Length: 379
Ligand SMILES: Cc1ncc(COP(=O)(O)O)c(C=O)c1O
Image (cartoon, rainbow, N blue to C red; front, side):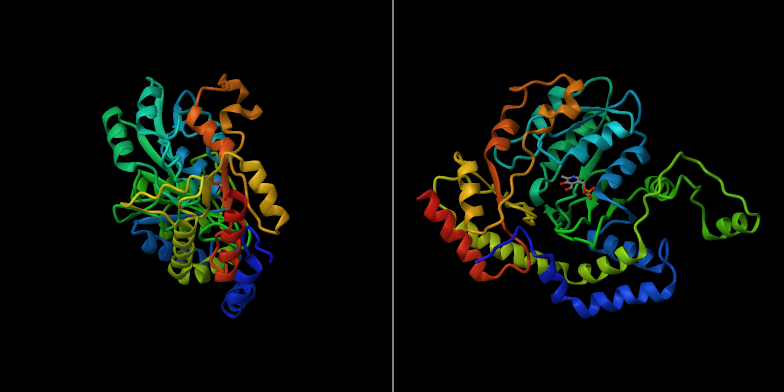
């Protein structure tokens, strides 16, 4: 039996009529950027998150970069984040001119450890950038308390955690500003690249609206029309071309309409894994009860990780090793001067983590097949 890492063809087929109609409508409208699809998607996604503003951008990386810039992070500042994340979390910090500072992670959730954050704070620290790893929110109460104590901004990397919750609040709304990714295969995956910034602050929202659109001054429609009439364009930032396309927004609106069901299916698969893999000599994900883990990945820790990965692959099961080696040991960040042993928990996780398939269109038979093969290898 073939079990891929995720099955985007099947997801498309299950929504084919609505997606085809939505894409066709955009094609026929002749408006391909900054049109009504984006506005509607931003409104609907803000409602889903329970936030005041959502600004669509063209990747999760762009979301982090623009959120940091909009929050005033720049040259000379330090931003504390986890070393076991996608490279874009950290490179977005450097691209703003700030310095990345890593802090080790919690052994249970594998998200950034609040205690380790405190140890890394200096007079240059301006922000904390927790990563809601694999779909579970980091320890946001403790992080918020540290941020308040030291007057820091909290920017959430919720790229993997759309719809995850912490004490009932949705990921991306727990800090000062949240960032999500709509890359294919994410919890809310698009047909290409996409992302969004989530916030309650009108100032941050306006800054991101401007930054994503070359740095054009964001003003009310009336003022914009006056500028258009006078053929003047006012730039208030050196910005970017990082807008979310209309086709992407139209596609995401369809996916958003079925997102709750898609998450429920992930949770059901996760429950099956928990029940059937318990008691084996592997560490299962540590899902904390006051947090709703949405399982973008179901990640286990196994001593013989590479052996199990090879065995699953030979049985046509797509298992993935994410975030290895950790970022502090990557050549791209050699200039930061970290060395092996600096973040032992992240290094241990990185050497032992294996993510097994979990996606909304996965069948019960596929889930059972994965369980059977893991049990067979580990027992
Ligand atoms: C934790 C994390 N942050 C940020 C990103 C960047 O998102 P994107 O690929 O949409 O730029 C990713 C991408 O996988 C990610 O896993």
